[in-house]
Amino acid sequence: MKETDRIQMVRLGETGYPSRLAEIKNPPKQLYYIGNLRMLEKPCAAVIGSRTTTTYGRNTAIAIARCLAEHGVTVVSGMAMGIDSCAHNGALAGGGNTAAVLGCGVDVCYPPENSGLKRELETKGLVISEYSPGTRPERYNFPTRNRIISGLCHITIVVQARNRSGSLITAELAAEQGREVLAVPGNIDSQYNLGNNKLIREGATPLISIDDVLEPFGLRRITGEMAREKLSDREYEIFRLLQEHGEMGIDEVCYHIGKEPGYVNPILSVMEMKGFIFSALGKIFLANV
Image (tube, rainbow, N blue to C red; front, side):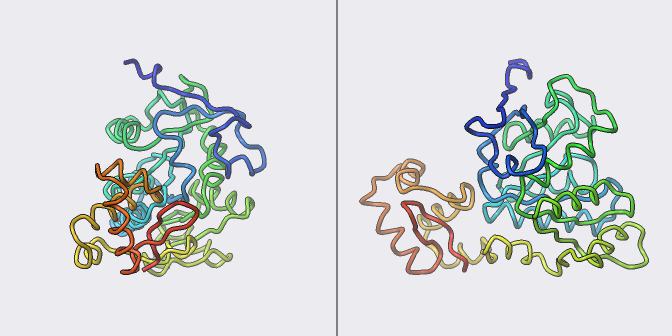
């Protein structure tokens, strides 16, 4: 199948157009995408930063994105080298959802070094752009696309940014859109952290531990080790399903594990008594344990 055959489009006002993005000033009139657009219906967080980074910045971006993905939050970034690539890879490592917003057509890979990552995002995540297929990555496209990154998300997290990083534009747009901005504190004598430290001085929420990324979503860290220790094999299987999907109906759980409701319901009741899940409006969610 040609890549162009996999490209889909949704217009502003149509079913499937991301609702949070439709709320911003000047939303894109149309979005082209490859992958699972529905992941943008889940809670979303932008994880962004500079292309030129340190080991600390890269490791922090991976840890933040992995934590978010493991708890059902879709990680959104721009597929650039540096922090963006680490964010996508961290989310993929966590077995969760991640979306890349491009400053070119979705059939164009930029930077070329990320061709492998782009292929993985197309099959396991989402690649999206307001630019028509074939559009080249012109310099002026990227500041414009940044409003989409922030507009899709409940929060924007700046991991590591230089003073003139494009990430600061995204953070400013997020603030204008009424979305919370978080920034990772960095060494005050490092040029790599000047941008995020300035954001904190200007009112961004400092991110002082990985768990802080979950607070805006009303979540607390649920570690796989904790679940593996306290849940039976079948309970843990359902726990992992909920980590992957974020929320599920009972029929969906039954379908995925190949069992009838009469078998599944007692397991869910035990998991709820243990405090790992709760149910509301016919859906099952991971609890804040």
